[in-house]
Image (tube, rainbow, N blue to C red; front, side):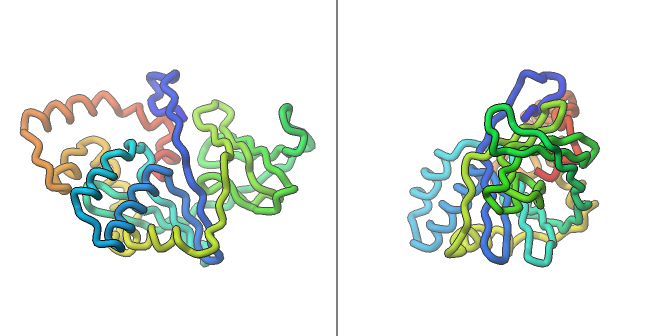
Length: 241
C-alpha cells in the first residue's frame, strides 16, 4: 500500500493474517500477531523477562497495529495498542454490494471478477469459486469463493493471497484473547480521537510505556509530524487498519 500521498512511490509491503475458527475471525498483521504470541508463550512458560525482551526486539515494526476482531454475532471490534495501553471500539460497516462480472483473470483462468464501490473508493476483487470460503482481506468477503486478489482502481492498496489458515484448535484466539480482554472500551468518537492524537503526538503513548522523552525531543517529533498530515491518503480506511 501507499503510505504517503506526497510520495506515491513509497510502497510498503506487510504480511497480514486472516485467522478464523467456528466463532471468531481476526485480521491482524503478522508482526503484531508474532508479538502477541511471544508475550503469550512467555507468560505461559514463566519465561525470563530479559529473554522475552530479546525476542520482541527481533520483530520488525508494523504500521498496521490494529486487530480487527469479528464475533459470530457479526459485531466488529477494532483493538489498537498505543504504548502499553489497549483501546477498542465496536463498529458497524455497511454491507458490501458486489457486482459479479463475466471476466477471467489474465494470469489465472480459475479466478473470477467482482467489483464494488466501498468507503468512497472503487474496488476490484478476483475470487476462486473452487475454494468455497466466503472470505478475504480486511472486511472484504461474502463472494462465492475465496478472494485471491483485491485492489482499488487507483492502486493505493493491493492485497494478494499468500495463505489462509483455519484455526481448528482455537490457538490463535487464546494468543490474542489476553490483549483483547484488557482493552479499554471507547465510543467510536473517543477511539478515533485517541488514534489521531497519537498520530500527531506519539510521545504520549511512548511515555505510557515507561520511556522518558526530553522536551527538546518531543518538540522535534511534533514539528516533524505537522508535515505528515498527508500520510493517511485514505483516512477512513487507513484508520481502521
